[in-house]
Length: 330
Image (cartoon, rainbow, N blue to C red):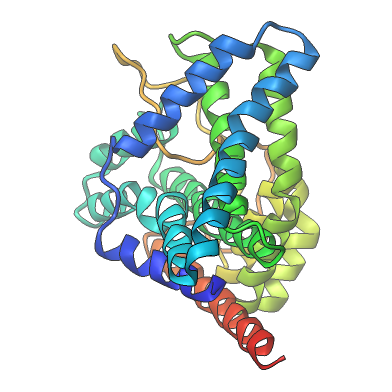
């Protein structure tokens, strides 16, 4: 049933994606504000309470609803899985930025591409050269694909197999969203979360993302240039401060033969009257100024990234289908 739930959710999301500023996103941001304001009193224990209420409670609620529906009908349980995956898993939650930037670059509208990247990443991109612009688009897109698709996919399948329904998908997305949202609000004009909440949410998401990140990197290696991907993974993952980000980006760089890493864009959000928060991945932070081997980023590499991600989706869906078939036969 996990295979069909993921398949139906991906198909529906391609046909009818959630629009920008949708009610799900607005509800999540309101939930984040409410839990932080009501449970964050500044102590270590309170940080655990905030994270537990914010992340674990929705996951338990999703599981409880699934138990109730599945008790009456397998089809109702499947429908609930598809509904939860529809709002937690999918490319179209971030791909509009990638597509718009790629189209702008194809039309030689680099200023528009820089503005779109600035809105996506919340950094000043006005002085970025074309190669650096492409590098940031590639890195950010790869991480967004992992956090919106492969990470959700992994935790949904694992906990669904253990009888927890869609709880894994909710757990992963809420953990990722919480860490990203509170860190962003701490840099914006909104009411900031305490450092304890920000640090704890970052550590717990990194822990949840440890295995999925390495499986994503392995998938990129399998569907890309395996030898170069593995070599880059082993040699260049340390270029990024986050080990999870490092293995994904290094493996992808080797898989498609592109140079990633290097100097970051200047820090700082784009100046605006009202800072916004979009469904983007967390900032990519570098531990050094080194870069992977490979060709400097060019426009053709954006198409290579799309192909790499879709081949990885096909790979993991094929494996999930084989596991489901083996389970039915067994």
